[in-house]
Image (tube, rainbow, N blue to C red; front, side, top):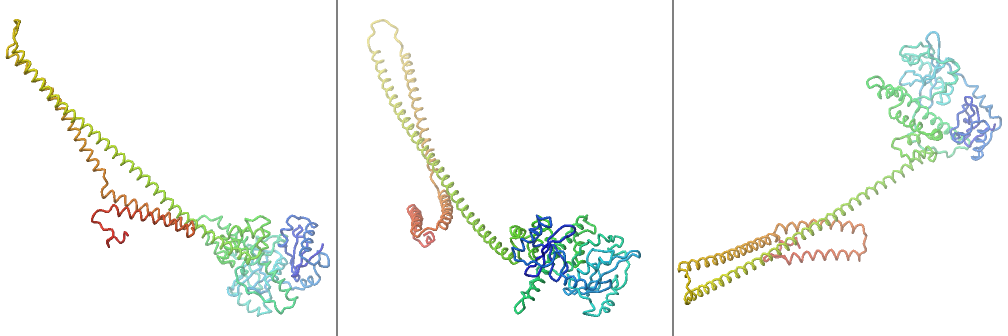
Length: 589
């Protein structure tokens, strides 16, 4: 199997990891092999040594990596010698971190029958030793192996090289239940139970945990480093160190976010309202392991981002920088950018920030355009409503005008009918009067004939009516004729009176139908409201149409012509004594 090294000195090789072949990498000056995150996606479909080696060969050939001499399973001699010369740490040996200044040691737990070993840490200001992780080993060699990983990862140095170890031991012994150089018994309050120590075989397989108190530099604004004046070898070593730090931070973010999410879920799963499981308990637990509330919830967001991703996306996210993970895990992060991070299209925090700024600018511009479009729609709707109200008002006035005209026409027809009936009644009355006169003339002639007949000689002997009988007949005929004439005159008079009453009623109706001051005021109000609605409609159309000066002049000419026509109408209809040019009417002008 061929090993390769990149331009930064990182070594890549196909190795066995827990019984399965994996593509792993290590720093040139390190003994620790780690699973390569850069090749995780390419190696996802390969599951044999040959196929993984083929993936590594292709990637090395594409990126110009150089092969190393010797078999892949052997460590470089200088590395093996260097690692073998390291002094093994023992319980009570105190080490200081070059990163954060914290103290570390191998602690012992015993119940009188069994002794277990674990990595412990202490802050000099706090003066209390606490477990650095949850790993407890029954064998000292296993604890030493884990502590060696801590030495390399946290750059630990023996306290004797920098300060008096005895002074630290005396200072912390009074506060520390796990005294330096002594075997401590487990107190009832201690959360680590020695009886639950795992067997030797599982202990060898327990992975080394990262300290929860590792500094969070994801959101720090770091100054740029100037490589000017450094030789090529120094620059390569610095780049290798940068890669190591970056990979360590990536592993830290992923592992710690999973651990914090596990604790959060456990506490909230058992939350029953008024017991010890609550949000305050979770925050207190985070503080006990060196995590602030904000950092804990950012880690929960990162875990949610990883948990909601596919295996391929998880591999891409695990290879991303911590700052990029934190940014993509925010609840406010746009879904498009989050998916681009998962797909590997966004590979740096700066690229993400640039795209986020562009996304926010486009979103703001889009929202502004939508707001302006909404205002335009609202103005257009108002104009349409005004036009509709104007049309409805015109239709209503046309209907009222038609109704009034119908009433006037009906009144005129009824008046004409009444006049005709009155004329006919007068004619009939005159006819009756003439008939009465004729009947009077006939009655006079009849009386004359009766007298003539009375004066004629009678040749036959007949019984002549007496004067009284003749007078009775004459009076009876005269009475019947007079009664008939009186009845005819009475009927004619009644018909004439009815016709006169009808004419009077129709004249009153015509007087009522004429418009008064209130009607004129209502018409003026309607004209004002209609003109206002048309003004809004015209303003909206003129703003949106963007007319040329010529077209604009034509429209304005029509508007001014309508205004002058209305003014002329008011002038023509003004009553006598009203001066349109008076000073009090200047506002109207």
